[in-house]
Length: 120
Ligand code: FES
Image 1 (cartoon, rainbow, N blue to C red):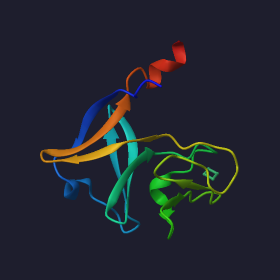
Image 2: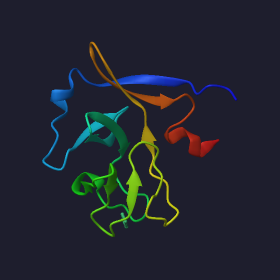
Image 3: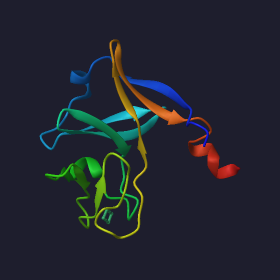
């Protein structure tokens, strides 16, 4: 299988700039789109701003003891690492790889992904 190719976008000069709220979730932008960054066990994860179920704002949810983000609207849970809907409703939470580098925090978008996919 071909390895995934990513285009890396800087989302902050430093992790401290992301401005995590008390629920360990920060809101930032990736290529002009709002996304969430979740912090769990010293790692950070990037995922969609809104819940794929009915658009609940995930930044207003919380992270449970296993590292899942829980939507504030109907409490569906998603694994921040891979977007799996671990509470079993069959949705998928879009997520992006994140890297903390010397000069900042980067999130990777898969080449050929993004809003333009819809027109292909
Ligand atoms: S909108 Fe998130 S669980 Fe329904």
